[in-house]
Amino acid sequence: MSRKARLAARPLTHGQRLDRLAMVAVKVGANIQPGQQLIMTANVESLPLVRRITDHAYGAGASLVTTLFSDEQTVLSRFRHGQDAAFESATGWLFEGMANALNDGAARLAICGDNPKLLDAVDPEKVGRVNSARAKAYKPVSDAITQFRTNWNIVSYATTGWAKAVFPDLHPKTAQAKLFDAIFKASRVDGDDPIAAWKAHNAELAKRRDWLNAKNFHSLRYYGPGTDLTVGLADGHAWCGGAATSQSGITCNANIPTEEVFTTPHAFRVDGYVTSTKPLNHAGSLLQGIQVRFEGGRIVSASALKGDHVLQKMIGTDDGSCRLGEVALVPHSSPISQSGILFLETLYDENAASHIALGQSYRKAFRNWKGLVQDDFVARGANQSNIHVDWMIGSGEIDVDGIHADGTIEPVMRKGEWAQ
Image 1 (cartoon, rainbow, N blue to C red):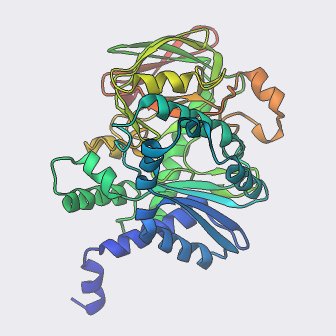
Image 2 (cartoon, one colour; image 1 turned 120 degrees about the vertical axis):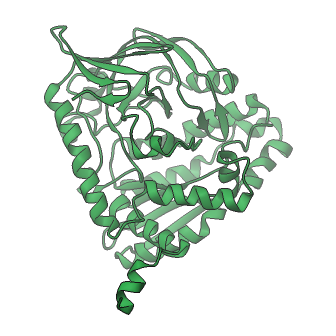
Image 3 (cartoon, rainbow, N blue to C red; image 1 turned 30 degrees about the horizontal axis):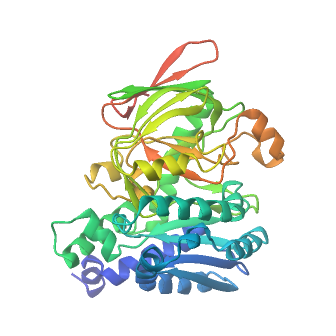
């Protein structure tokens, strides 16, 4: 065997795989363009990935990379020592500046990986107040994202706290290594050519997206244990999945990884009941056993076996936080589901199961969305809110039917798998 062949046969080192993830985040995820600025947010522990992303971003021609860091201990310090009135405060000035940059064409990249159990011992009433204040202050940024004004991306880093939460019985170093392995595999960076792997995956998602758009269902019905939910679809809705092109004309993959196809439900045409099939990590609080009933699109009753106070505060954020803004289909056989890992992180768990999202609708999930004004979206059924929170309702026991405008029914999923 030649030296070149021997080198090619060697397994990739951790640093090489991390560098590949950074490359995918820049070239496939955000797709940074020459002369474009990048605004990145990250946990301080993810600095090794931040540095590699920064290198690749400048290599792609970025004019400036600005990173804003968070730290778990300082987050806890606020709850331990902050005055009561402090829990109504949020950095609106910072979010206004971020929104201005995004609206001027900067790209956005977020590295997730916070400890999902960080706030378990914190007063949930305080957590709810902080989340509500932040959601309202963050609205200018979330508007830029949900209206797809610029290219953006989310990737992840296996922080120590996250790894310990996912694999509590393992030594912390072993847990972190195992979580990194899962991240690299789900993000398609372990193969010979990650860029080509993402091109092929995007093509497969596009086929599923195009099939659903051709069907143009009026509504979807989910049914199975604890669930019988009919979700009306917005007038002129469009299914999306994989790569998409922003209003700025830049094509990006917003989520690394992604296994979903999604569209816009009608905010006033959702009826029935639904039970979550996986826990939800929401802003450092873990919610389990969510059960919700909808009437006329609005939640009329909701409970959670764990994190109920946070759930109630979340759905009471504003008039639209108790209505749906997204519905997504994911096969139970997706690679992330088949890993058998409960990631306790929405970026991954939402790609292991079909899901719905409370709150703001995405502008791109409509036909001819670039030519529509805001009033048109609302008239077609799009929801408006300060939040957008995904939670999982799919499993190997859930069936999904597509219902046409004339009432005819067509199977979409059976036992969590595509029926077609």
